[in-house]
Length: 457
Image (tube, rainbow, N blue to C red):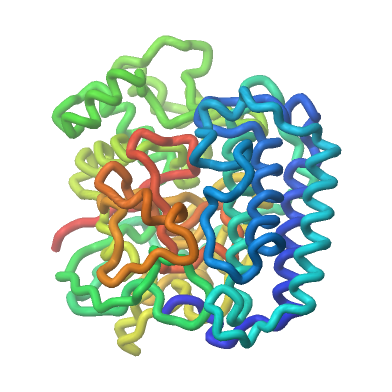
């Protein structure tokens, strides 16, 4: 299981992937002024201009200067080294003007494509064989596009008008009601064992075993989370872990990231929250993003939650967060064939009819959309819309080997990070697959993160 493509990409396909991802990067930043590109909108995020410089420097390192050599991101120039210049300090850097950055992106790409035209894709070198390093650079840029969109969503006063915007499909009128689906006990193949591209932390594939459990058919919606607020969920320490309650108090959490009470900036008490949930439903709440202010739609998956909020909601709902093993099994395992799928629906690559991916809808779709994207056990929307917190720490699989550089996964393994699964609306299709592992600190919620519940049988 893993990549649906066991056969390596052709030279033309690798070139097309690089060109496609670059077109998207330029499309996303096109509406932004020079001042907005240079500004650090939050200490949690880089200036967007830094991301552009980092994208070019990373490509220069891997596809031009050290093509085919196992290396380290530490060899990238200091200003764009993610480890020597943490996000909180990147606003202090002297980042080149946007014209210089665009020229660097262009000239680096020209040199990279010259190398691609001549490189031996049948080489025994694992970096070159099958074009691995070209897919790695492509997906590195795609992941920074999601980071750029996180920064865009944190702009305080400016509105972002996308250069391209695609509408949501209509929800399936025959979609089943919210609830849980049963996942049978047994062993399934987890992770990636294919010959296609995957990151080192997805490998090696291994046999994982679970007992019987239930998984939420859909992610948790705004309407469901409003009930949590209305019931005083942010005021009840009994449903929070000690660590979560401490962070909730310290950070002053009263609602998902970007939500505020209409006309009232004071933290709501339980009575205020209940009043907000009556009558017009969500109308007393609004959600602010770089796209403007709007009421959160009831059937959209709730977004911008930290792990501690997700954990507290799960206890409130009489459920729990899934482990990442449970999440991947519900997404990938086909009980009828006894095999794991690369994607919830099978082996075909993601399309706009199967999942809300690819960044052009600028938000999660209402649950009940994308019937063609269901998993074999009956879960909807397991790729796209929002990243879903699991209760698992980010740890290596047995037999893990760092490749091609330790700074991608190895330095992050540990219990201080929680794993998120499934991708979001801002994730590119090349990055989205059942085996892909994301991770972050449990306090983070600038990411497009939400909840899917699990229950013991």
